[in-house]
Image 1 (cartoon, helix red, strand yellow):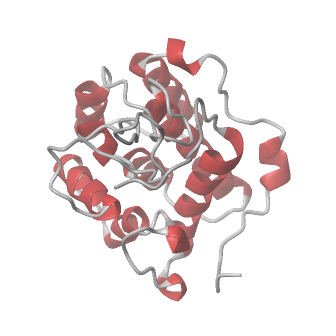
Image 2 (cartoon, rainbow, N blue to C red):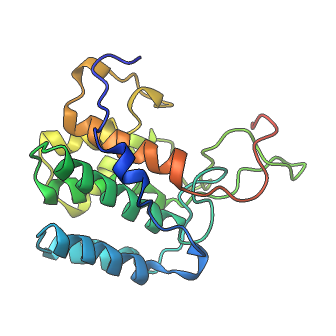
Image 3 (cartoon, rainbow, N blue to C red):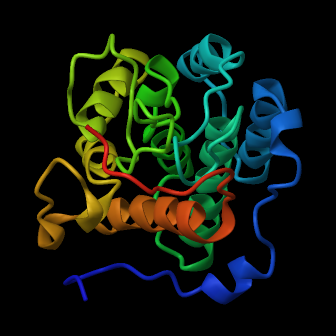
Length: 217
């Protein structure tokens, strides 16, 4: 077990009301933004010029959340961001963690922001079979680790404090592909984002199509 790993105490109650995944391909960005606004009302989070610009810039972006696993279909990323925000806010409240709700919403919406700019595309080999590497991006991308790329894009929209920046960089927790995560240095806030992200991606979100079968290049 990872030292100091954060485990919300309200998993059972959360599993009784899982995030919606029915026919997500029919639900566009405006649908999911409306759902996020409902969360904002529920948790008394005021909008801002920065938030509205973020919504407006990406409301028509139908990128999936991943290539070969969770929510790998059109509009899948917007659904994933909503799901992570929902659980992060819920666990922050249920476990009385005391973090600012607006901060929770910001990092939940921004933790995968680079996928709006460089959308996930199906990872395939020249043979046409699915590639084993899960993160295939467009050839235009100059490679920067996903977590840092997300932070770079996030900072174009919002001023983030150190707590929020660390949460975005460490949102994969000990499962990061590219960076060595010092788990003992992660704040509970970072663990809250990581746990919400991992819970949604691994347990409640859908994967469609062929599974990984070959090693990518």
